[in-house]
Image (tube, rainbow, N blue to C red; front, side, top):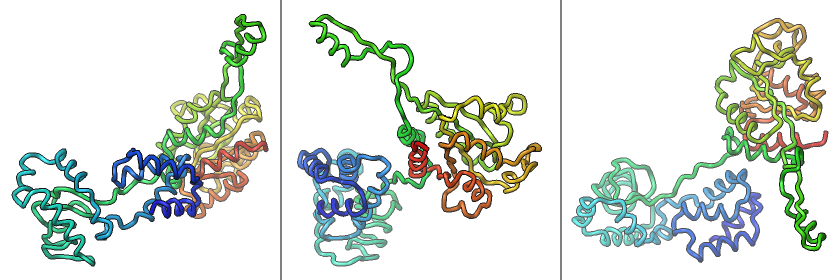
Length: 393
């Protein structure tokens, strides 16, 4: 059974090695996980999946392979571990509830009856008072009514089941959903490029050992500059209007970027960059930065990341005076061309689902201006964007 599961993961494109699979088998033999589906799910994922971005694919294969575990299949559910159920009941039930179970024939009798039903039953059953099924008054199944029973599958109705036996529904780490701060930080780390800079105040252990050996055993301390992430980033953030519904994802991106990059400069714009940008939205009419000055202040080795939904009237991009807030002497497209010509390593992150981009003409225009370097603000999209930013040209 586990070999077929291993092959299913491989067939889906997960790079699962035989060594990792043997490690999983060893962990199971050592009793690392209890004989429960949710614990096996977590253990197998830990042993077999080394990249968090592939958790979603793993969960999809797991769900498809073990689909129907909650179904009334005698060959599977007949093996419910009674000792495990008994231990859980002792932890979860009050003395009064245990007394009511004993009044029905005691716990062993209840479990023994369930096992017999599962062995005898050959098909799905609905209604009635004996078989494992739905509706009815049987103590086994779901969506019916019985003062005390074992719910198998389904969802809680009367909330009076003695015990529940069902498949756990796992929340996927999906590469099509918006990112959380932690996942963004993990993606941004792929853009790191370390360099040693500053004063030589960090002990270089390898050089110290080598120098001491060459110095006939006399201690020869060697120091070196501390390593820092040398990548420099310009972050341009669209604010206001339709971007209000994307504030959270943009805040998460901003927070992760500030933590990851020592050399990070951020500026705000509305809908499309024009001749001026700003750092403080509360004072954007009093304190702003000339886009021309920005182009001359920050050298071309900066990476540029634009974040916005690019959803506006196309005139705001293509026409002088198209801005809805002020009269812009030059079209937004002109400023976008200047920015991307200087910062040729540039991407645009769009919080709008990629499947919807074709319905908004302005998104199509902005994608063309970016040279098709627009990516969705998702795990998969950010991964693609980071790969593009790492290119030499």
